[in-house]
Length: 153
Image (cartoon, rainbow, N blue to C red):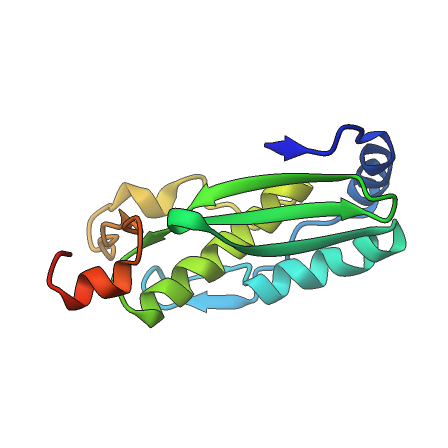
């Protein structure tokens, strides 16, 4: 976590948000696990008004070497940020887009302390008849697209 020198006003505003924030509604379907999950849109729907009502905003973007950052900012200029590694199934634009969407959704939920519907880790158990989770790997460092074209990855 990185932060501005002072975060007292941001902390007070985040406390006010968390007093009214409800869990993100799980309205999207996961066809692989036959379950519902809270999409990025669901998460934003749950938090946008409480954030703006309390002078808070969020920005998210990529940083060097396959990391994605979520920054929570207060109108005073105070901020905190969290960085997370991107993991992808396929090294192509669709794989990257999927990884970014996951990073945005989980980064936003993490910085706000927001909870979606929780399956208590059931999806990772791979019980009989369940869909096996694909293994993911970290996004390669450097210009991964050029390295892929050269056959290095």
